[in-house]
Image 1 (tube, rainbow, N blue to C red):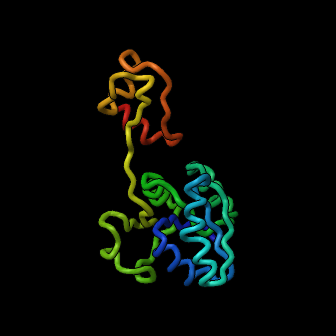
Image 2 (cartoon, rainbow, N blue to C red):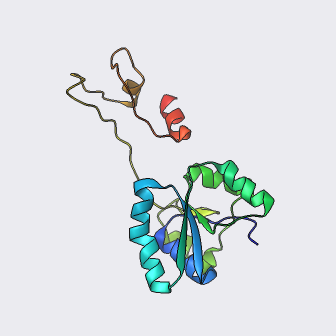
Image 3 (cartoon, one colour):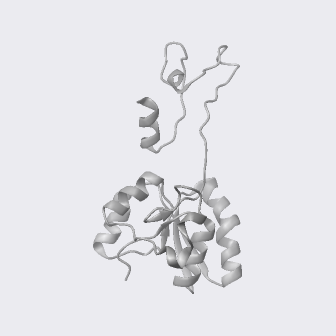
Amino acid sequence: MRKTLLALAAATASMTIAGAAFTDELSIMASGGAWQDAQRKAWFEPFSKETGAKILEQEYLGDLGKVKAMVETGNVPIDLVTVETATVLQGCDAGILERLDYSKIGPRDKFIEGSALDCGVGLDAYGDILAYDPTVLKEAPTSVLDLFDTTKFPGKRAMRKFPAQNLEWAL
């Protein structure tokens, strides 16, 4: 029975480990929605076709407590979980996530700088944008600070449901 989880994200790395460690099926907990749909088409389905391994998918919404509870009870029905970098670091420090054996994956220096972590591998690089509706606002917001200026820029805001980034922006 698994006592920890692998937090992997890079397609190449996760598929290499998966092929070596899990032959019949691989259970992946990912973030759901359109992103998981894209992962399925780009990674899960090609991997399954190439190896014959069945991919079992679950949805993960960023709650490390859920992962911790699985580990503590010894009931870990998943092999891989895709999480934010901060969650990988936190889960690794707490002993919730399994440390990776890079001798089985590949040299750390072959990954994008900073992405080969002790308990996970970076999946993607992304950027954030500040967007607005020019039919509603006549003056364009120019920085994240404008997002929090409800006097100068009244109206609704849309932000990620993941609080860490929102708190970083607020600070």
